[in-house]
Image 1: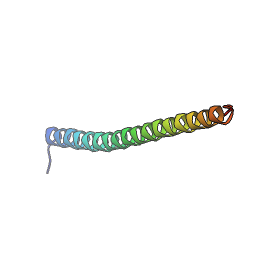
Image 2: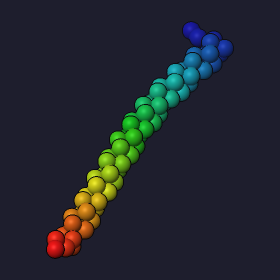
Image 3: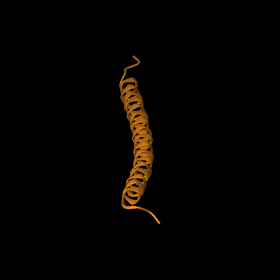
Length: 70
């Protein structure tokens, strides 16, 4: 049979193990969130560059359309 001090020791070990498991789960979630943010940030930058290039081409085409050839 377990004595009182051994029981407390086991409870503390169990609590520590549970905390470690919770921390691992939390760290995994944070890691996944960081990856998602980086991915979204990269997509946003790519979209911004695409929009700038598209708008630049549109304005360039417009300028060339109004040039008088005479």
